[in-house]
Amino acid sequence: MTVPADLLAAVVRRDGAAPLLTHYDDATGERVELSGATTANWVAKTANLLQDEFDVGPGGRVALALPVHWQTAAVLLAVWSCGAAVVDTAAEDDGHLADVDLVLAEQGRLAAIEEQGVEELLGLSLHPLGLGMTGYTGDARDFALEVRAHGDHFQPYQQPDPAAPGLLLAGLELTLGGLVDAARTLADRLGVVTGDRVMVDERAAAEAGPAAWLLAPLAAGASIVLCRNPASAQLQRRAETEGVTATLGLGLDGIRELGRPAAS
Image 1: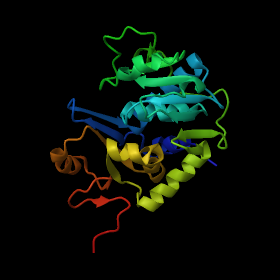
Image 2: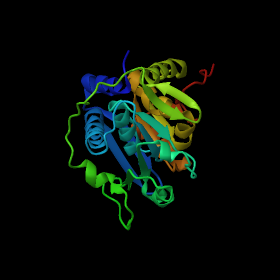
Image 3: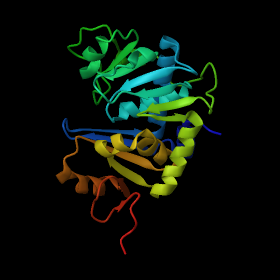
Image 4: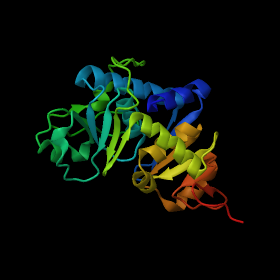
């Protein structure tokens, strides 16, 4: 049985130079494109940071208070590479954070989380160029500054156990191996195929969860176009420009919508 890190490794072996994750944010006008190799580099650096600085490993629980974002994809894969479980904190009143080993949060949520007495906290600016936080005076360590010092290759102290917890989300519990099984099942059920370029907006991604928006395309050998704060008037042209072949949760002319039967 495989674990999520194996899905990314397979992508890099197949064609590490090809675009894997393209991220748009229409609120800021940013576009960031990561190849499979660049994504793996971010994942490795983040996993080394988590393991070396915060002792994240098998049996660990890492909470994410992050939006759907390219950096969130790297963090998710890094936590799973360490063999730990991801705990999602979608609600603002994250009362269960005392039960986790580390919290990674976007800068705007740090103050509320700090009030809960969380000791291990990493803040993310989510800057398009990966720059650090500005105007922040709290005790959280800055992800962007910390991650730069860590290596481009990751070797876990203990190999991830496919039977260990991998995702704890709104009552859903999946093991690391179960995440891979779910991703493959979803890819088959949705109709994601090798070479697909899948466009998904943050609403659909948040509703579907990371097994669908991130791992299913990886499992199928597809790439992802992720749209945050999407301007609906731009999506059709963007899909054409990016060579999108399928969408998740979006209806666009001439492009098949995953999980929907083809029009007769």
